[in-house]
Image (cartoon, rainbow, N blue to C red; front, side, top):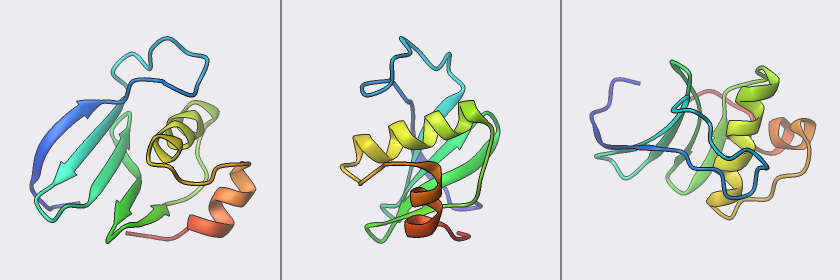
Length: 91
């Protein structure tokens, strides 16, 4: 993503049993109004034009980041398979 981010926030667990993601999950709010989730150093998911997108399948920890991010945005989350079927795609 080469769009300018205007704000970065650490993703704080609200639905996950973890107390913290140890600054490994960052939410970037872009000038365009879109929101991108960065897990470790990779952009893995986002909300673009109000629609969720997930780039692909990742490690268990990154998947937890993705699920937490989507749930916090009020998006249906069941299984990794469901997430990829409903929201999978490049951005």
